[in-house]
Amino acid sequence: MNKKNNIALAPKATFHKEIAGINQNVMLFEFSFDQLNTNIDNTFIEPDVLNPRRLNEFSSISNIDLDNQIIRNGQIVEAIGRFITDKEGNIVYNENGFPIIGILDGLLRFDSCTRNRKNYSILVGYYDDNQAQEIINTVIDSQTVLSNLELGFHISNLEQKHNRKLENKELIDILPYKKSRQAISSAKKIYSIYSKYPTVINIFPVISMVGKETINKLDKIVDFAEKSLEMDKLKGFAESDAFNYKLENAILSAHDLIEFDAQKNKSLTTALEEFIGYENPKKKKTVTNKIMINNHVTMAIEDNDKNKRSLKTTLFEADLLDDERVYVERFIKVLTDKENDDTFDLNNHCESFFRRLEM
Image (tube, rainbow, N blue to C red; front, side):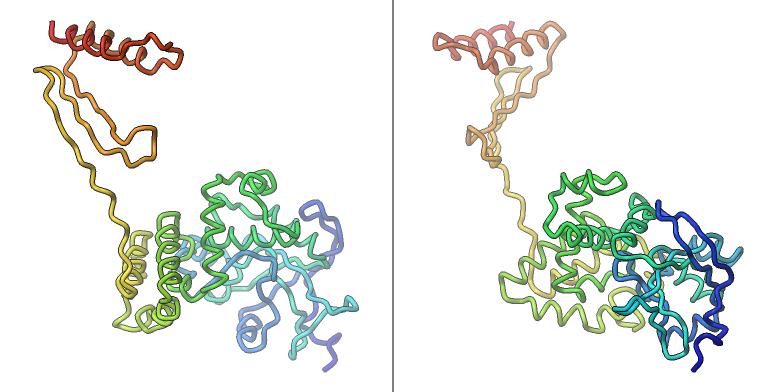
């Protein structure tokens, strides 16, 4: 096949453009739906290895707004990609003579255009890994777009670039957008599970709606399964028809998918819990002894399970007048004053306090 004469190779335009501070020659390609459709059997355009974005067969559920926009107006902003090259730096082509392109930005647009039979436009250049990562860093709006898992992939890419594990505090400074330590911790946690047991994560149809609570619960389930040697059993269940949402007997129905919200993730984690016999550790019951001091003050003594200085916690509930409240505040200040010397008599202060309240 003479690739130079293949019309599929002809870009619509070639020009210089600065992208993420990188000014170089780029080519604008526009692929028709028919060309995109051949990509299913003979791939030529795909997520770049550095792109943290993840798609599945239910991506349309979380991308309905983008779908509506593309159906009405087509793709408005071009995607950004890079040519996949061999060791000599030459572009790699597929069997149909299409240049193989890694999508750096615009994977959701690619998915939407493919599903809705629309043309797909992409600016393609020659970018090494460092340049490609910088483009990804610049175009990602992680506050609203990246899921926890996708942020985990992004963090993993950054750690590979730095050749070491990065602390959460470091990542706050390195990431080009603001993320809390909690968000970074959740991202690391779900990525760790995915890297070991991807099918367990794949049970969630809308990965963008897998939040902190679900991740923490899933982490405890996996930890329990590992320690009880039930992980193979759990993986087998995750790969079963129970999570094949195209089947009638699946845990989530077609209606559940249409009306999907984050609360439906609870039914999925509950199914995992029940299958391997995991039970959430029940909160330790608090033993409370209530004592009526007088008509105005009740004292409750509870077991203290927070590993503090005392095994007991004392709670006072009091119906106080304004002047009594002031006296109580002063009394508490005296009790908590670290500068009290050895002559401080707690009993005298307590007796004085209660006599004052009984007046």
